[in-house]
Each structure stands twice: as structure tokens, then as C-alpha cells.
Length: 243
Image (cartoon, rainbow, N blue to C red):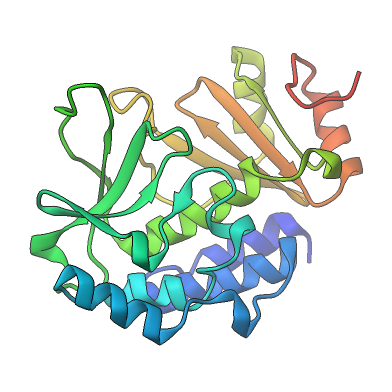
């Protein structure tokens, strides 16, 4: 089975937290390396965080910590899943993820923490910190999937040469839409342009692609050869392409 069909078929049944984390396990094994017991945070770490904050974490956030919570390549190479001891309250929102330059944060409203798989909100961080919280994804389990995919896409080691990105021009956009499969994942806002077009995911044979608001294109192949084939088909000012 090609990766094109494998990733879409693996993602298609994501309709609850259990299926979301099955996809996370599948993706880690197929694209990176299988999850191991030591990749997760301990129950004691989570309990300590709950005692410190005086609240219970949603079941889905606990699952995220217990499965890939220590795996930097899945959670923290680009943007950062906060460690349990770093979780913090921002007024009425529990913040669990931070953009790598502290330009945005993601969290769950305290009023919705009792839900097992609550909605996720985000906001940009500015000097006056007056930007509003906005809807991100309707379930925390979807936000976990988005995190895993994005971290794998954006944080590949340069020496591996399996990931690249460039400005998305009209020709490339049309080519992606015509020749690659749209993944069954909901649209969601790009934190840097929340009022613009949404983020969309695509897949090809052993390739995953992310369209950031029709402005920027990210791609990762399972091998350098697959990435090189894509870059040759979509020439442009690729940021990571060797001279």
C-alpha cells in the first residue's frame, strides 16, 4: 500500500480520541520510529501538575502526555508541548503549547476542562497581550494529531534532507490541489494569519504537505529522493535545498 493511501486511510477513522491516538502511533511507526514506553510522561508527573494547578486535566491531554509526551520529534522540536510541570493558567485558559518564538499559545478553557476531549483555543501574543482567544480545533485529540504532523514536518534535522518549505505561488498551489490527495482533516486557522485562508493538509506517495493559508508550502518525504522528486516537479526558492 502506498503512503498516499496509507496516511489517508489511517486518518479517515479519526472521529474520537481513541482513534486519534491510534493514528499518532501509526504515524510515529511509519514515518519516524515506533513509540516506546519511555516516550511518555509518568502518571506521577501528571498528578503533580494537577495538584499544583488545583484542577484535573482532560483525559485527552493526559493521553497525549502518556503516549508521546517526551518525544521531542513529535511534540517539541518547533513549537513546544509544555511539560506537565510547565502547564499554566492564562486567566481562564489552561495553556499547554507555545509557539517556538513565544508568538502564540494554545490551550483549553477552564470551563471546558471537565470534557474528556474539549475544544482548543489559541491566541497571538503581542506586547499588550490583548489579542482574543480564538477557536483552533473542536477537539483536543485533533489538536494532538495536528501537533504530531506539524512537528514531524517542520522539525526534521537539516542533515536528513527530508523536509523543505517555500513561498506558495499560484502554479504550485494549483499543482498541489490537482495532483495530491486532500487529507481528511478539518481546516483550521494559521495562528499568524487567523483571518486568512485556513491550513490544509495533502498527501502523495510517501509525501505529506501542508498549505499555510495559501501563502507557504511545507513538504516532508520519507526519503531524500522523494523530496528531491517533489522539488524538481515544483521548482522554486526552496529554503533547505542544497546549492
